Image 1: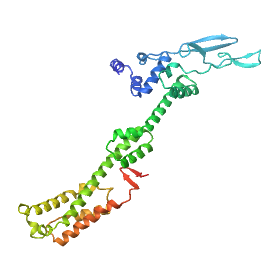
Image 2: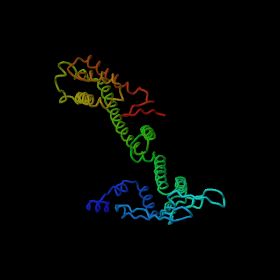
Image 3: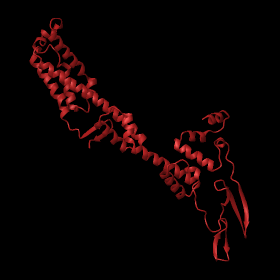
Image 4: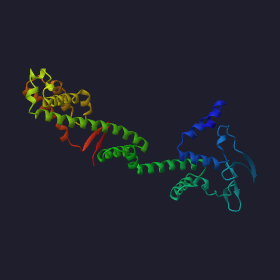
Length: 326
C-alpha cells in the first residue's frame, strides 16, 4: 500500500499493487513466491516490464532463437527449428535435443505447507506444465482447498456468528449456507435468514403474550364491573385493585394487537387470520361494548391467534428462502 501510494504520487500506474492488495493472504504468499522464483522483486512491479533476454544460435543449417528462462537459469528455444538427423533418419528438435526437460515444482512454492496440501499443489503445478500456468493452477487449487476447509467448518462459523440461535434455527441456517455457491455468500444469506428468524421469534412472543392476556381477561370475575356502556366510561382503578389489574391487562392486550406487531406475526399466522385479527382488534377491546359482544370478540381473537400453534413446521418460509426441516 505504501509503494502504491508513492507511485500514485509520481503519476505512475498502481494496478498491479492494487491487484496484490486485494488477494487473499494465501494468494499473496503464492504470488510473492512466484515472483521470487521468476527473479522479480515487489518494488519492481511498477516499473515498465523489461523485454526478455533472447539470443540467436546457429545449429547446423538453421538459426535458432532462444530466450532466457529465469526459472531454470538457462536459455530455451522459443522458435521452431528442426533439422534432419542422418543417424536416426528422424526429425529432432534442435533446442531440446529431442527431449523435453521434466517439469519440477520450485521448492519455495511448497515451503511451509502441510504435506497433503503440498502434494496436491505439486501435482497441479506439474500437470499445468509449470511456469505461469502452473502458478495459476496452484492459486486455483489453494482457493479450492481453502473453500473446502471453510465448508468443513461451516457449523463452527455459524455457531460463532449466531450464538443465540436454537438448534432448529441453526439447522435452517446451515441448510441455507450449504446451498450457497461458497461460504462467503452462504454466510451473507444466513444473516438474512437470521434476521427473519428473529422477527418470527418476536412475533411468536407477541402471539403468546396476547393469547395469555386475552384468556386471563375473559376468565376474570371482575369483567362485568369494567365492561358496558356505563362501566366502560369510567376508570375505576382508584377504587379496586382487582379492577385496576383487569383494565391494565385490557390496555396491554390492545397495545400488543397493533398493525406493526401483526406484521411481525407474518409467517406465524396465516394472512387470513391476521386480516380477521386486525378487524377484531380495531374495536374488540372497547370497554364500552356489552359484555357479551366483548367476550365474543376476545374469544375470536384467541381462536385466530391460536391457529398459528397448530400449523405444520415441516416447511417454513424464512425471508427469501424456503427451509424444510429434516
